[in-house]
Image 1 (tube, rainbow, N blue to C red):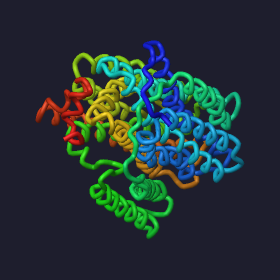
Image 2: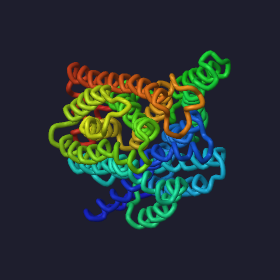
Image 3: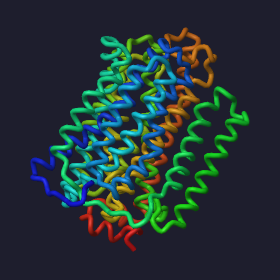
Length: 494
């Protein structure tokens, strides 16, 4: 367990950031790389649209549901050790998934794999905060950390296509095994020990169970709704259980002296806006990538590698914009990068409504680039604002809440957008494989509905940021100030 703070050298600090970013890269690429492989998996394992959605969401749902618990455990038991355990668990899940003989075992592997990022991601942000006390360097480090997710988005689809074409879909998962082993070795040597916050009370198991049940029940209802019918007793029961569990979770956390999630943090307007905006971004951004990949393969008949290259402009632009955003936050604060990024990505997303069954990538690649660049510009100020709004002892909790809401957005995006995309398709056409012209038109119609939703919610998030800044510029400046000033403004420190 980490019980002290070992100050790294300047070179060692940036090498540690590289290892931490590698963990985030592995977590994100495991979603984007699978999006290209889904049609092939669907054909070989006879997985329909619902099972294909679960291949993505089983991983992301566990990731999102347990992030908060992982962040709190890291605060109390040691962030470095939990990061290494998370990477090892991720590799083990990838191994199980890669050798799975059927979709049942594959989903079990994805559940295990999703546990890894829940442990490693919140701790990595907390370690970065502890290493870099100067706000400018911290913003740059967070920008580089965020860039790794953009790089995963950039190379994930194309990498998935190369692997599926050359080695088969199983290696989409198996390549994570040696990469995880490498990260464990490097992390043990390079990541410094960070002071932990010893627990004075027992771990909040009730809160962890209630939060997990709430997210899982709602996601289950959304994904299975088209299959069983929205008025089905099972679907209605799932939504009811999710809402009841959420209400119980909030009530329980408000009464606990040391809660899993301090609900009072959301009284801080900048913290709330940053987290809600991040959830919206991942809803619209990552969720859409899955269905654009399906569009290029199922409607236009592109190979997996071609489909990966088709959507790669999104991730390349993201990777270029994220480090620029970190420097902008250090100089001018988080408001303008966050607002501009959300507005640009929202407008560019709506521009994709001109996409048709035969639209070439040459006509829309710049829309993809603007979407990715806008999101890359906005995510670093969101993350910086969320983490800077609390004192250091709550950094793991704030990081976990922020990342949990990002991943929850991804779960809801894949599920809800999938309902819209496949709404008009006959059940027999919802698996993998090239669609006939008529059903391809129906797919594009559903994709247009999803694009409308994505563009509108991104613009709504931009408006929310603008309203916050108009009402009070002070909360938005918190992320640009030294951590001591930021924490004094946070409600948790009052």
